[in-house]
Length: 211
Image 1 (cartoon, helix red, strand yellow):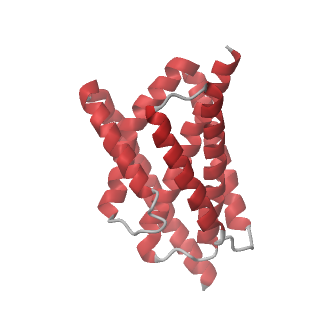
Image 2 (cartoon, helix red, strand yellow; image 1 turned 60 degrees about the vertical axis):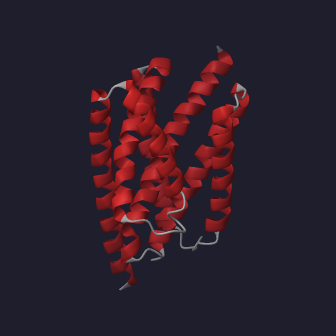
């Protein structure tokens, strides 16, 4: 019974996860039609919602809010990828995306195959997440060296790698109720987005270090 419930919840979560990517693609298309003056305020709203979404693991948000985030994230992701395409080239950005997909799948399999319940990781990961958010907000207003930026991006990649394992492990051990399905799908979505963007940041910082 537990195995059947786990598979049922996983299927539901992955369906919502896929739908969030559809909303992201729509958001990226909309971004091509928007003037820069509109994109910046929308980006700020997206960042605020992403900060709120970090508390999805502790606070239940309305599904409408959780579906708004991927759409707005698509707008922000368009401009983010444009920056990295300019700096790194389209082929390298595409390669990083493919690598992120592979890494995400491997981490998902690790989480799903672990017999050990790692629920106790949650509080530690959440604490590190808050620290990363605080420092990221501070560094938005105060310039940092390339090395500091590289370290933060590297820590963030490690953090969301562990979060990916943790989230899939929660699914593995049936810790996701029906009411939490959309929230977990958003968690997985944000895990992937943060892995992708911060891997790009790491590569960009490394490029700057050797230029």
